[in-house]
Length: 100
Image: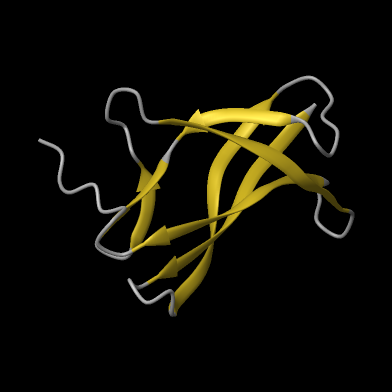
């Protein structure tokens, strides 16, 4: 099946005050049928300034559970979105810097 993978991400400061909440789109993938509770392995998330990005440094992988599967019958073609468990990124702790 064809899925669009998304994840809600809270960006907070060092005092755990919410700066923003975004939906990060991991992309569209063709994969076997998924169920709520399944695990997905992907790159760990990080911050570049206030943008959520993949942390592509070696060894930075993460496992997330599927929290919800949404089928949008309004759009054509029908879109099936998979929502992974929420993540929280702390400004200053999850900054990945610039890549050359």
